[in-house]
Structures are given as C-alpha cells and as structure tokens.
Amino acid sequence: MANRTVIPFGPQHPVLPEPIHLDLVIEDEHVVEAIPSFGFIHRGLEKLVEKKDFTEFTFIAERICGICSYIHGMGYCQAVETVMGLEIPERAKWLRTMWSELSRIHSHMMWLGLLADAFGFENLFMACWRLREGILDVIEETSGGRVIFGAAKVGGCRRDVPDDLLARIPAQLNAVEDELRAITNVFRDDFSVRQRLCGVGLLSRNDAYDLGAVGPMLRASGVAQDSRLDGYAAYDKIAVEPIVEESGDCWGRTMVRIREIYQSFDILRHVLPNVPPGPVDMKITGAPKGEFFARLEQPRGEVIYYVKGNGTKFLDRFRVRTPTFANIPPLLKMLQGCQLADVPVIVLTIDPCISCAER
Amino acid sequence: MKQKPLTMTRVALGSLLRKPATVPYPAARKPVYLATRGHIAIEEDKCNLCLICDRRCPTGAIAVDRTGKTWAIDRLRCIQCNHCVDVCPRKCLAMENDYTTPMQMKRSDVVPVPFTPPQPKPKPAAAPAPTSDSPLQAKEERPGERNHEPPDQSSAD
Image 1 (spheres, rainbow over the protein chains, first blue to last red):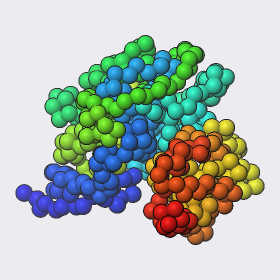
Image 2: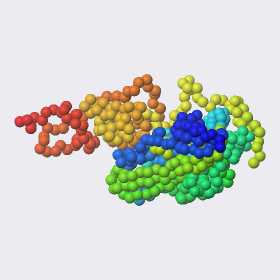
Image 3: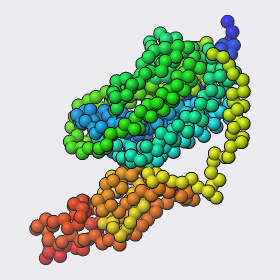
Image 4: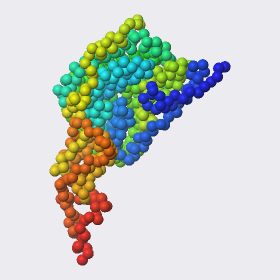
C-alpha cells in the first residue's frame, strides 16, 4: 500500500470563490477520501428573524447570497405569503418569474466564467463575464440593483417595470444570446475543454439520487427533477421542461447549465410580452401565524425555506436549506478516486456558494 | 460529439478586432438608469425630524438628531435598500441614480435641518395633542432630549 498523505485544500485557494476547507487524503496522486470543514463565514442570519419585523427581514433574506439574491428574497416572501394566506397580484407573479430567470442566466454565465478560470482558460473566463454584463444591465434597469435586486416584498414586488421597458428587453437579450453562442460552442467543442471535463467527477444516477443531489448536479446524472414544475409564481402558466443529461460527469453538468441558459432566454421571451397589467403589490394586514415550507428552483438547485410565525410581527423560526449544502455529500462521493489535479474542477462543478450554505 | 478546431481562436480574434468592452473612466462614464439605486439624498427644507427613517433603516445608517436639528447618514453602512424613501411621510428623501463617491475617511454626511420641533406644552394635567404631521413626533423622544426641555414651571409652583 502506498503512503497516504493529507493535503489541505482551501479555505484560501485560487479556484475557490468562497471559503470551504477540504482535507484530501491522497494516495499516489489519487484522492482516497475528502473530509470537509465548514463555518468560516457563518453570519447567523436565520437568528436575526427574531429581531427584525417580518416585512423588513426581506432585506436580510435577499442578502443571504450575492448571486441568487432575488430568489432568496422571493422564496422568503412566498413562504410568508402562504402562511398569511395572501394571493399576490398576477402582474407581481409574472415579474417575479422574469427576475428569477434573469437571475438564473446571470448566475450560470458567471459560473461558466469561473469554470473556465478553474481549468486555466483566462480568455474564456473574461469573455463569459463580459457577456454577463449585458444581463446585469437589464437587471439594473428593471430592478435598480446589479446583483442585489431589492425588488422582493411580502405581498408582491417593490417596484413596477414600465411596459415600454418590458417591450425593449427581448432585443437586448437576443443580442446577448447571439454572442453567447460562440462562447458556449467553445465549451461544447473545444479539444482542451473536453479533455478537462469529459469523464471527470462521475456521479451515477443512483448515487445522485441517494445522496440528495439537487439542481444541475442531479439533472446531469439523468434525473428529471425541477422545482419549477411545482408551479410557483407564474411557472404554472409556462411549460418548463427539465434539462437532463445522462453522462453524470463535469461535462454533463456544464452542458445542463448551458442549455438552461438558453431555456431561460426562451422562458423570458414568453414571459415579457405576457406580463398582465395591474397592481404589483397589495396591502398587508396582520402577522403570519403558522408554518410553511416553500420550495423554489435556484440556479444551483432546489432551495427550501421554512417559516414559522406566532401571530406577532417577529417570526419564531426561519430556516433555509440551500442547494450547495445538499450538494456537498455528492461532491465528497465524486472526489473519491479522482486525480488531485481534477479536484478544483470537480469542486467547481457543484457551483459552490458557501455563503448561502453557511448563512 | 465531434470536436471542432479553433473555436476559441475565433472568439479571441473577434475580441481583438472589437472596440474595448470597458469604458475609459473617468474620461467617459457609463450612463445610469432611472431605476438605479445609487445614493440617498434629502431635501432638508421638507424634513420635520420625525425619526421614522432613523428607526426603520435596516442597518442603522441614518441618525436623526432632533436636539441638534441634523439629519446624518453613514454612506458606508447604507445598503441602498430604498426603505427610508418608502417610509418617509414627508417624501423628502430620494434615491439618486449616481453611485456614492469614494471617501478617504470614515465619516457621516451631516445635513442641518431648518425645521424646529414644537416644544411640548407645559401642562401636565392634559395630554397634549400631537401637532406635527407625524404621530411619532410628540410621543417618542429620546431620554437625552428631555434635558433640553424647558423646566416645567407649573409643577414647580
């Protein structure tokens, strides 16, 4: 038996956008086992719900993560609205759907850039992030913020989007999509990219299901699961087909995310002309009493919000189960037996968002 | 799937021939959008020092001093959430589209407010009716401010 060595990976590592620590047990350049450590950026956001008014807690929920911020705020609001038995206006539902999909596109494009950076393709990284600016411009023009939208509110949306602006957005999206084709062709066809991704970090369909993988991780292993099918916001009026790949490797996960970007463009082209007229928010009276689990599809996978109210304006309990947290056990499984040089790419393909996972 | 050669070379050559994607700041600036949340501004003439923005600010960035008649904001703590603008009863706060300017030292922007808060009437027997626009103004005062009130002559007699 060869000597075993333990190599620390992270929390500060060039490939990691956020701190997670893995102790990699190495045997002849192969990883035998990976032991994770957490807790570097825990902020105690869930506890704050006891000290903040339930309407003002939306600002904190939005700041759980800097990338999928809108869906965090929206998920919290959706859970509170269900507890209070509120039916928000139709226009607010469609605007929420629009912002969710914009958020998904910008998150996936950012991830593509980070992946290119992880396997040392600096030029591709820059190209992805340049295109992402086009989406951020749309987000800023509609919501007022670049990554923290600040548009979610218990009872609807905090701001309306004028109809002429909604009519202008598809042209902007088409321009970004046209340029994106050339970039995604590189991920799909380039020899070096495929050498780094194909067959690396295999996760079988059974393992993905048993270990509780969510989102693109699960769908890249052949399981068609997407929380948007539950029909929250306006998704009950939109046909969403889960994007599934069968390969279960890093390349499959990349392809799932790339195809999801184009699917989001299609959804937006359907949503934008169909946003109904009307108010975007409603008056809130009373305080939430009861409990509810809200399930939403974030760019990284299924996220669950638990809210428990006691009839006062301060909630009893708020809990988030983030997709990154659910994807850690499959990550540890994928790392077993891989090459040491492939560890950064495999870690990145779960799209780790540690600030979400630790809150 | 068949691998194609030179996919990235085409992208790189395209970038080489294109104009720079960045803006040569400060010679040129990116246009701001009407919706952009840049920084908070106040029309001090309309402010009545009602303290609502101070109380509702999620990060405690706004400090209103009724005694010193000032409205102050710590730009580094402000998260541009627009909540103070939403709750201001006099609509004297506004979200400007320009981002906050960089600062060299940590300090608050202090704005003097010309409004003079009405003094409570010196009649302890009957509760004074709130005279200002805000109901918070008459009943919610900080403990420190009480030292500056005129002494109650009627009770001294």
